[in-house]
Amino acid sequence: MQLVLEQIIHYALFGVLVPGGILLVWIIIVGFPLIVLTPQAVRAYRFGGADCTEVEKHLATGWDLVAIILRFSVAANVAFPWLGKKRGLSKIRDVSPSWFTIYSFVFYVVTCLLSVIITVSALIMTFDVYVLRFE
Image (cartoon, rainbow, N blue to C red; front, side, top):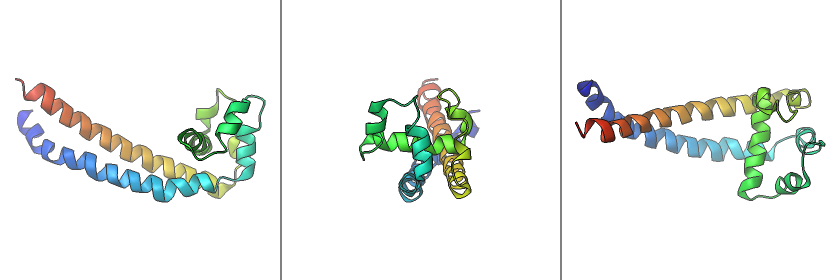
């Protein structure tokens, strides 16, 4: 076990830094056009229902951090409709165009894949530092 981790630990730092940089660039280059190009019908479906509060409607119109998170959540609901099931958004794909559905799905699959790589690499580094170094 020690020999295997000694070989892996050298690559774990690159497993955090390289996919982290790629994830940052991915969100800027692919993610921000995704929230800018969100069709009006999808926005109206998400923020026009009776379940949506006035605060959410106003927060979703700005460019602060909360508005960006809310807009990314709209794309996540389009990519994976079961995420919005509790809020009654499971039929959001019916109002979204097919290009937006595919774009959202590809964006979130790649984002989740990079996030898993970063998390596993960070766990390997943490395991090495806190468990194997103190034996």
